[in-house]
Image (cartoon, rainbow, N blue to C red; front, side, top):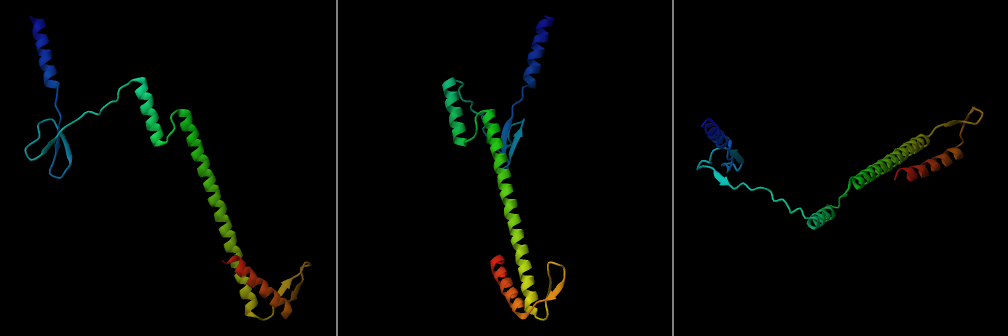
Length: 161
């Protein structure tokens, strides 16, 4: 008799432990999950379980093949690793190209600035001196200044486009 009572008590406890969940939609459109039924002010929504496809080998291989082809993603860990390394190499290559382009832009800007400064110096006029190979200073003649001025103009048009 005690066994029967314990069995009945355990069935009663299991039935009480089983809870039902209700999915309700409130006035603001938010989804609310409750243990008690939805009040009349809330709309009740149906709760559905996700559908699991059958586990037949033909269906599984065709489904996984179709999914990976649709995504265009690798299938195996080795393919994933290879794709990851390729992305790393592509990123490194593009970063290197960007650095080279940035460096070339800086060099061009420096050359342009230098050419403009030389042109401004020659256009100011007056006596201009330079230093020769032995380290001695000498003053440029008018023809040399005009030649250097033309060269500076050519450099400005070349580097400052």
